[in-house]
Length: 153
Image (cartoon, rainbow, N blue to C red; front, side):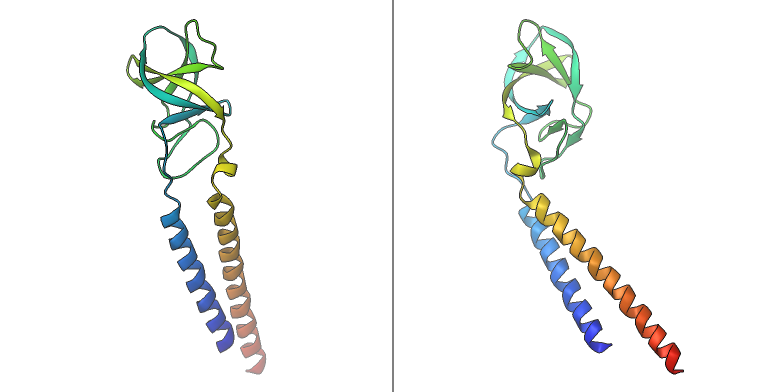
């Protein structure tokens, strides 16, 4: 029983240490402000746009620390809207509404592949799985100990 408790305590300590260390590493450094739309990264420029067409999408997830999939942005909050620009194909550029009625041009840079850009997503999944397995092992060990003690007495 004591060996199980020692193993569990050591495993939890190591896991917590890894998680805390990983969280300090996860801060991402961005080269430029961007939005993701339909699987592509669009760099938001300082160039203001006046003539926009209809809305084409919006930011569904924001973070300046981690990478996510979907219509993600490292600079604009969830709900920020994207618009087509009159006379420009959306495969070249879109407009991002940075304030009410104020739009900035966002030029398409290339495909956005969140999980390939952030190797820590895979590491986090492994750590969470390991942590869950340790918790399950603790409950099984406690259950077996109680069952063993009950059979003795």
